[in-house]
Image 1 (cartoon, rainbow, N blue to C red):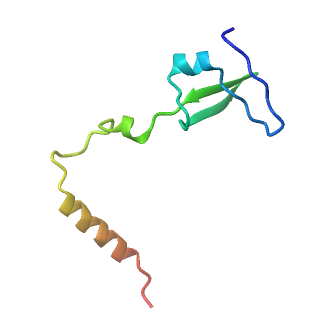
Image 2 (cartoon, rainbow, N blue to C red):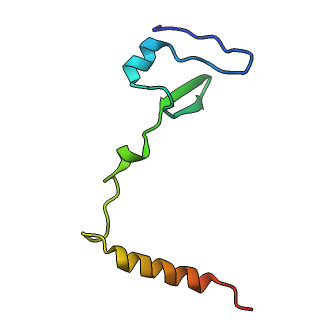
Image 3 (cartoon, helix red, strand yellow):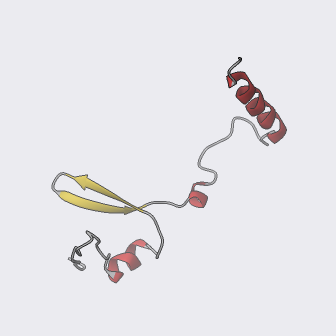
Length: 82
């Protein structure tokens, strides 16, 4: 066991400093809280910038003008006609 914590009256738990240090969890970071069998698991979530490049575009470089035009066309086709 690395450390322990107590659930306060608001249901909040402090992650011990040693565990934050090992996992790299910093103040204001987001974490996922999950139930796995009879355990509670807290897992750090990546920030949006760490995901950059994880999805390969269909073509390189992206043609932003063409994307914008397609999006405008899509939105205009969704308008209700009176």
